Amino acid sequence: MSCTTTLPRAQSPRRPSWPWLRGLPISLSMQTQRRAFFLAGMLGCSLGLGAGVGSAQAATALLTEAQIEGSLAPTPAAMLRDAVQSALRAQQLELTPESDLAVAYSGEPMFRTCRSELCLERLGRLLDSQTVVNYTVKTEDAAAKSSRPWRLGVQVLDVEAGAFGAQLTEECPSCSDAQAAEKLGALVRRAVTTATSLPKGTLEISSQPAGATVFVDGTELGITPYKRTAFAGKHKLVLRHLGYRSEQAEVTVDANKLQRTEVKLTAGTDALTDGTEGAKAPVYKKWWFWTAIGGAAVLAAGAVTAAVVLSSSSAMTRSAPANTFVFTF
Image (cartoon, rainbow, N blue to C red; front, top):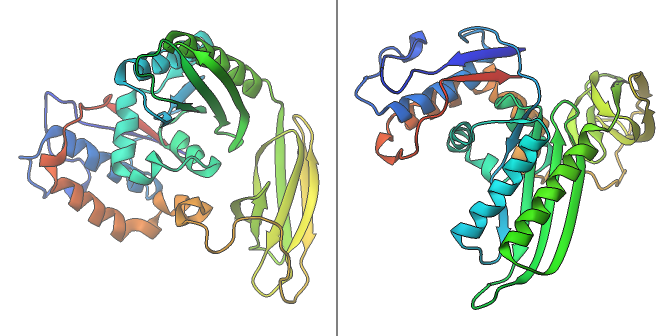
């Protein structure tokens, strides 16, 4: 389901259109109002409060903030990002505005540091992007040196499949800033080409009894009955259900085909150790947490969050994003 939420333009502040926000004062900064609309949109779409329904644009890519380890001055950091952006545009990808990403980060701060497939998928869906690109840079202080060692990494996530289509790294023992930027751009083009060329099929999983937690390749993705797009190839499945023994299996998804798998669980004590994320995993790595963000389960929390945001107008300094967001769940 897609829900289009139109934000007020910067030059014409007005009261929020949702009934439960109309009583709020209008003497707030426009950026603060936009943050409130962002949070309200996340909640409202799932509750049928959105302003309308829209379709996703084709070939859009979301570029997250770089993960930088080591000392990197603003100028070479900007050079690297420009190289990544140019590489993505060369692949005929339309970039999601950075201002939109800034609003997403301010609305849900955990997005800024979480780089798991689940987090990046939800961020991509929230900002209506088909591809999410994350890049990492590890380098040393370049004091009085024309070159230095670099380690560059690129991850490309396919939002539809909810999985990385490419994870590439490259090292340059002695590169200038310009050379590192050139190599990073080339690495991005190669990663995007690899990810977009991967064939996909559909994985459908059912269990007896239903309601089992589904892990696909070590990531908790939902409960049975479960169905979604998956990359063609072999996948490791683990099903867990309270009061039943966990079961694991390996399935092969063929390109453009539906792979159905049914698992019968046996009552008993679970003694399976399979390396999947356990109960101690951070809450933001759980599929149900991200489902709840867009659902009625966070009605009270969403209202409180919106109220807190509305009361913190003095903290807002970033420029307003584009006028329209499309929330996809």
